[in-house]
Length: 275
Length: 293
Image (tube, rainbow over all chains, first blue to last red; front, side, top):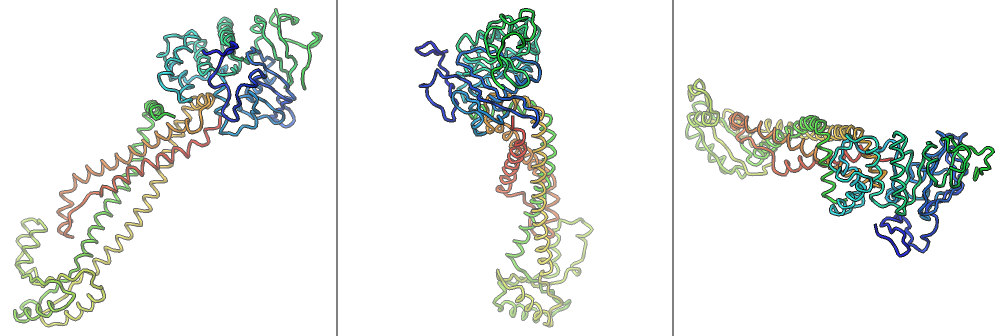
């Protein structure tokens, strides 16, 4: 991967096409939520007044109980849904104001990984990863090289010809991760990527994301598995009932975190940042 | 999207949904066969009408025992008319021989005596002669002494014309019906394929594929279905035509004096590429609602 003079990773698709602005503001936050509201029911907002700043190169856990709004938060970023109020700025651009025709170019700058893997089962491993590059009209020779590199990074070197349906859950998730990183996106959104995996494999996948993060990629990792969060010292964004309850680093210092209990703000001095 | 990638993805789709597409193609080819068959019938009817229109004829049947002098005088009168291009006299023997030659009839009919066939004067009329003028001329000629009857073939021609216009209308309606049928069948086939490949579409959209990128292979698949179904229909019709051509020629030539002809090359091209176009349209239209991920 190419690196700039400051050691930061230079990505070919770091700015999506609509309104791309070159790098005078490269150090600004990669993702900013400004007073974001999302309603699926009129009387009950799924997200209420979310304010968040994700810096470039950060690794953030997004956690909270089921229904807290973790997935919605990520889905708003890749424009599966649109905010009802507030703004989400990705690389300086207001995501909600993108035209439908610009959404594909937004997504080309994101790597998205899901709990249910979302790999095409009847395709080979190679085809599943290469598709992200074929979308970019990349020459086949370059596609082959990039796919081989991505598969090597996720520990699936030489498995390109295997049918994906024959792989284990952990391996299928690695294929999904390879697909997410093969375009060298600016931001990876992982929506409960370990939710369908046993604890041992979950740690493997988390480690894989950390390795990707180590190369300079920003990672937003949604999970409700506090045993996983407790093992790492990354920034944590806790959501509950659509509000951001926490945005700080180091769950280890939280009461009960070592015993895999969910974080609580009661009596811990934790701050409700918005809502 | 690179053409190679597009074709590759479409080939993969066709491979994966081969059974579904084979069923759709066979159903569609029946529909195309109906249109092609109607076109074939129209082609031959049109050729017949054209031939008759070009060579307007009149037959003047002579009375039994008409005097040779009367016939010769009649011939002179007819030849002097500006509408008459040529006059040919057919004796009873000539008429019988001509019938046997064109009709390729069995030995039973060959045994018919010459008296069954009346002698006649066969008139070739000038091209573009007004039908009312022909009728007036026939009425005048019919009053002459040596004349038994006059046949202008107007009734046949009128019937053929109305048959042709009805046939054209029917073929047009049939073509429209088939076009709708093809749209529906290909649309539903593609919808079925899309439903089975929804995960694939979702992955593509989440990776940043444009609608055109997602739609491309499905449109190619629909195009192929329409093309293959129309081509199959043309092939079936062609081989059917070859198998029946001998019999068709015998009966058509005897009745009308023309030989059965297959569809014109431009019709074949229009049918096959029209099928491909309708297939592409059906596919593109049916995909719209599945592209929102």
